[in-house]
Image 1 (cartoon, rainbow, N blue to C red):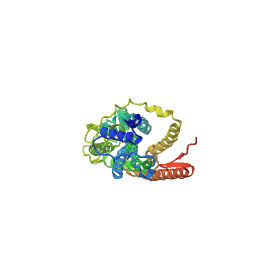
Image 2 (image 1 turned 180 degrees about the horizontal axis):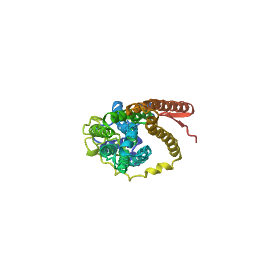
Image 3 (image 1 turned 90 degrees about the horizontal axis):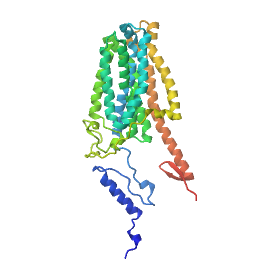
Image 4 (image 1 turned 90 degrees about the vertical axis):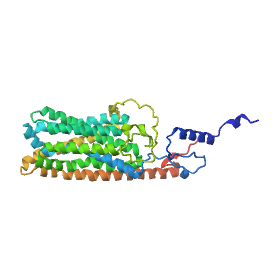
Length: 385
């Protein structure tokens, strides 16, 4: 007769049983997973579960799509600056009143990402990206057709334009967090922030050239066409990355979250929709202001951005008075040094972040080798009884 102890499962058997149950409950597509490790298995032989199913090239492609979408935030704001004196004459308003359209844009630029970002954390990155570009395109149509007697409508449409175009920066940052580990994010953020910073470099040049050649309304027609074309590109190619909906990317989301042309992750996504838990309620985005370290960063960057905005918004009016022979195109060229420096600094910033992360990881590894066990770059001291 077997003893009662013989009916108990060993830790290895329980681990294999749990592994089998996970395999049955997972999507039918084969996925890489961590094998059950014995007590004496060397750490180097344990295979880690990949954070995302996407290859490095596919990740760079997704980040590139997000970066180009983020370009519309800086482009929408800065393409408008060289035409401010012309618009002031068209509406028969003072330059100070036209500059208020820049102020309301900046206000909505700060508020709208909290709303769109919260929605993307619940409903997905892809539909919110598309909604932002659609709002931007519609508002640009209204700005291109606004009558010069309706100054209030110009203000309102600039708010709507900011609500659509300015939020793409926050959405792109969420996409990077979905598909990249901490060790990868520095380089990805370096590329991603280049997109939003191209706007201050090329936006004023394009705005000045369009205003000189076709009038100030052509600026908004151009933005409408550009945002509509990119709306189609994202509709065709951008996959859903929100981990609440697709996990590591291998779960099949709903039809709204699927790209029309699924070229990314092909062969690694389940053919059956996964049963996901119901999404949580919408969080309060203002809770982040309760963290002192976040508030310190917001205040520091807010002051810098306020000074920067004050400089770039007043350049056209001041230069038009001091150098009346300058055209809108030449005034736009004055912004090239600002945008170029921001792009270069952003790229180098990403490289420095990656280097700093790896350097810190090596320091922890060296410390762990002398004071205790070292697991994946983190020092874990021996326990003493």
